[in-house]
Picture 1 (cartoon, rainbow, N blue to C red):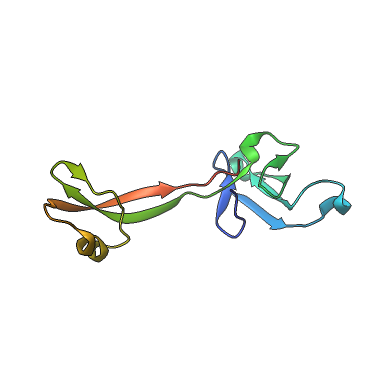
Picture 2: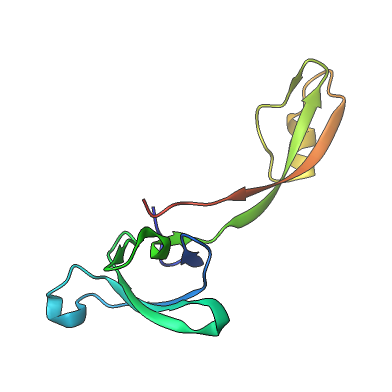
Length: 116
């Protein structure tokens, strides 16, 4: 689900500048946000979105999604299995390690939420 309080972009990765606008156009449209989408060459086009971040009058490439957030975690590794939990810190992984651990590896992963 789209969260306007977190960084966001269009579905196809373009930058967006928008503001919450509870009743743009006098409430005649179900729009919640109004702003601009960056196109090639730095041009900007106006767009409006509903409360879920879906573009109104545009194709779904203009839908809003929260920007990809990169996270870092630690994973305990065992001879016949990997750990089943990604820990927020190396210290936490060490504390939760069970007998037979052969490694503790840092992993980087991306989290993205879709507006749809």
